Image (cartoon, rainbow, N blue to C red; front, side):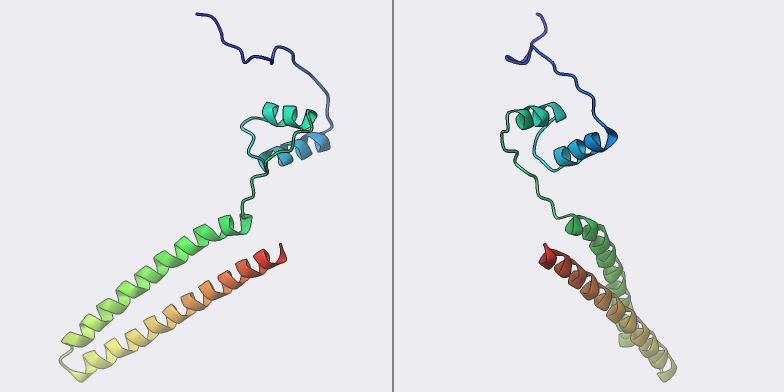
Length: 131
């Protein structure tokens, strides 16, 4: 059992590039669906059109932020439930007032996070609208 070569790829081509040329080729290659740099260069030499892989980089950058904000909102929601449970079991006015103030503080934190999400979504929308 010998080595298997792809048919038609028995010759190689070697060339020198400047750093800028190399970086440009690599950048263009990364935006395509070509599986290898060699495939990309062969397609370019044959003037075969490349299938460009469009990714929304702003959405990629937003995703970790959105996940983090979601996790924070889940924590705030749990805190809301805890305060509500405390209010339901409050027997005296002092415990009720304390729980009410805590609820107001948590609600303010929730509003801030909701506003932050709204601002981030608006930023993403503006970036998409410009493209």
